[in-house]
Image (tube, rainbow, N blue to C red; front, side, top):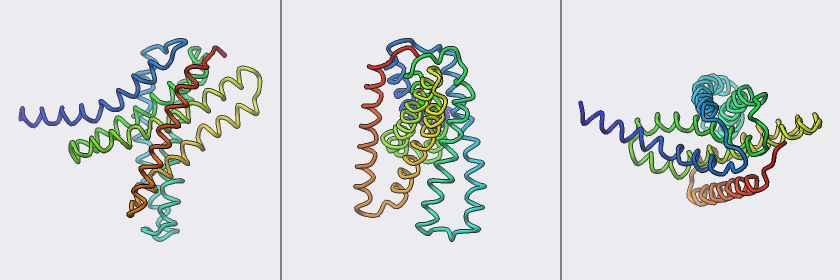
Amino acid sequence: MIIYSSVQLILVAAAVIPAAALMVYVYKADKLEKEPTPLLWRLILQGVISTALAVFTERLGAQALSSFIRPNTLLYQIVFYFLVVGLSEEGFKYLLLKRRTWNSPYFNCRFDGVVYAVFVSMGFALWENIDYVVMYGLETAFVRALTAVPGHACFGVFMGAWYGLAKSHERHGHAEYSKVSRYLAVICPVLLHGLYDLIATLDRGELSLVFVGFIAVMFLAAYRTVKKLSAQDKYM
């Protein structure tokens, strides 16, 4: 029993560490004003809640979609990964992110949007990762540490970049620009998430190289976005 518990603890640690490391990185990149710790913990919880909500809607979506499109076809996969999986996961992340932070007095810098969105995304990835790793073991932990967890972090970075811009526009009285930016805070990560899942699932020969290239470009773009917004951050 003790050995079993120790193995389980190792697996959970392997699932948690990648997400925790990325949260620490983004937290440290927030140079202007650190966000309060209780708020960040609540955002992680929002990410966990969004996981449960997404699982529910994805199951319903898969059942409904199979009534209109034959499963295991390319069309089914495209619709499923973009409109069912991508929209469910990124949509719930965004809804809970906005509900918790949009009117927060601490949301006073554009980079705050990146911090908030990444913490929600890492709450989602952390809970999802624990589930996968406990079921499939350390090999899965290693693969997901290099792909899925940073992938969710990237989706969070791009969501947060537009979300922070939306708040900045609102603070300056640009309601229409703020609305467009909020839409893009959802659309951008949904498209990236859908494409990520679609390429990963097809995984046929040369598509493996396409997947590696895709995640490399996405990771680099997210890294540069964090560096740029961190350096240019200012009070709204």
